Image (cartoon, rainbow, N blue to C red; front, top):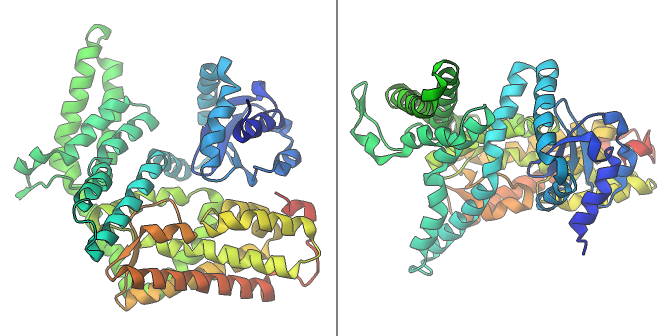
Length: 466
């Protein structure tokens, strides 16, 4: 019996050229990512017209179909099942093609940022789940309620964060061509309690020093050491010497160099973020809120995940995410203004109605690719709304009221359960809500006044149809 998700997968497959045209399949939080043999075989208009499809994005490495959170996680395995007979062959070929396209079309920096993002994106579901539980536990502790269960909730929410370095090391080795379990092994050194007996530069190390940055560096080094060993160790000794040398050499360098350097860098990130918002908060919030939509459009926003994760490790929350979330508020306000101004454009208004719920919950791609970007100026006025919302939250940071998130992933209204800060939850939520309302209002006003050319329909109505 077919489910809605299997029906969606079956509908997508012929529109992207059929099984023979699909070389590899993957997904992130909102997008089904396909590497295709020939993109000219894609029927993009029909693809956009599917009810479950919120938009499409074609970049240098993959053809991306925006399905939204939750939906994409259910549709992807259904889509892969349709390719099951040749899945292994297609995955290998897709990896080769993806690497070839990356070499030819991507800059080294852009490629590095995407690969680092790919290390952290698989961790987001656990970060979100544990973050929500941590927020609930904090609320219960503040209220003095259920004292018998709060220690259990603290253990459940804190367990993953205590070992996140191991997962980062595993994913880093996997992404950069090493053995995943060896990446996890060398990264585990960072959080091992026994490092407290190691002295470096006259200072005793602390378990967890360097955090995810130290784990990332350790796994990268471990991958390099492993590859060096694979090329030089005789095959008969490879199974014994390669993993031993990889863990030994990388472990020693991690203890006597990487943890110390990464710890200093992590501290610098935390200090800089706190200083930035407490000293230049309004201006910093304005700049960050204005620039985040272009990062989302380019798919580079996920490169910020290591910074968020470092701040959560250090301070218990990231002060950057609520500011950056204001970009989504500006986008929602801009879309509402387009909806009001272009009331005779039925297809565009239908697009906005279908994309707004996702936009309110912080999923911005449908509104970006279906509304603001095709129209041009509304994308810029949406950035203005994000700048205003970011400046609002940044202003309160200057006044001593920090707003943060205990996890990464959600934004918009979905961020409320994850909010934390140095004040009470009520104050923190009120400031965040004020930022959202400011972003909505400025995005709406800027788009209503400056974002459209005054006509009752778009220049190319078809361009705005998702």
